Image 1 (cartoon, one colour):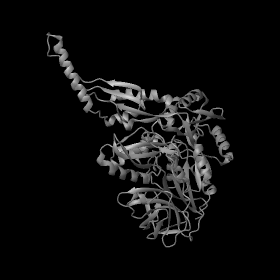
Image 2 (cartoon, rainbow, N blue to C red; image 1 turned 30 degrees about the horizontal axis):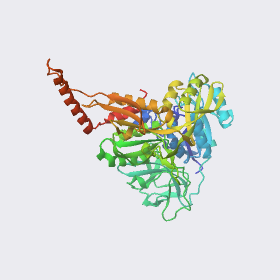
Image 3 (cartoon, helix red, strand yellow; image 1 turned 30 degrees about the vertical axis):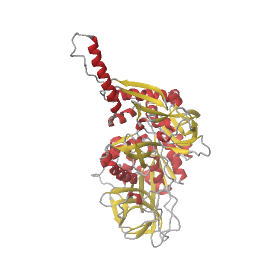
Length: 599
């Protein structure tokens, strides 16, 4: 055990984690030159296309140190985007140390700080690494001072490296061996292993990735999952290299995988404890807290008969991405589907893309929103959760609505402060703190409603600051707000998939935008269509799609005007009748297009 080191790589998005991991794999000869490719650990097409890490990736490396000892390194490469921070928190639970990577040309950014705090909460040994020091724009001294201010280390403790050229990899290896403590644990104690990830294989069932804290696990042992109480045979256990390598036994401190032949994805929970059925441990490992979804949206199959297939697909995705939460939901317009919780808009987009690529499921996503609390003015009424606009009670019985607020941290250059403040104020934010980290970096802290950042806040922030602003947020509390339910009606019939909860001040402009958009997207009918945005019975915006009309008077040449009038009256009656029995179908494409209001 003294020669095992478990560590992960944490950083802000785009600071070079995956590239540095590639160099470590090359240096330890874990991957041959023939198998080597950029972002070697990112095995999803989506990750390669977008150049981001979506999933944490665990891999085992072996290193012969100059002191003659052979060391085993278990490395976990983590995502950097705020929407995948739950992946990071799970990886940290399986490690004793972390490489904190900072881009020497960009300095410390918001996600660097929040990932660092996560690591400190888990009592991890932090090794600061300055990456991309070979670039012309690298500010080595300035960024080193920022790191020293942040974690209070000595300048000699900061490792200078370059993921591109491989500079400093030997120093990183030495630092991992010298500074990160070996795992503690008793191989003779009852088995205690923490599940930190799982994947679904269509031939072998669910494969769980775990870290053993105490005890020893052998192949063919009978194991029990503590939280679910189910017992299985460990058909195969092994370690995670580029491929899975079976082993006869694993003991305290090891990271590996177990295949038990489970086909039901519900039976394995990330954060659960594995123990022996015959000699169980006294208590389960305190796993990580349940995920808190930030954005909610309905996901519906395009064809209603695909409902069960969609449920299977979401369950298999949930195995691989424990931060996805879903429950069944019905909608008048869209039929049966699921209410899903996501950590952010990028997370929503990635899940939609993965459903399409990995499971061939084309889906419709409703207007994303957040959860609220509401209370009616009836006697003895309690606060209750409002997940969709349909859950909001009638305005006449409503006492108040509370919406979630967040603390948003934005780190940027001083020249963009004015525009960023305007953007945050437009989104109902209030500035609480402004700190100059250095002469060229300022940290702004805002309190703002979560609903305002759901749509397009991050994209606008990036374009205002030309990509120089980094953004991170954490939940604050629920506060009372003047929120109203905005209904979209077509010829008087509400379309529940398009209704939204909005602030009263913004209701009119939001309603106008949606009505205008629908007028462009809906096909014309034989009768007139009225598109209205309404709050209760009050209509606040309206657009009209005129009817397709046949020229019934074309055959009348000359003659008395009463003849033409008679034909027009007859047509008018027909149109009225058609309007009463005709209903307006909203095409699937329109649902997706309506959400892109600003394009």
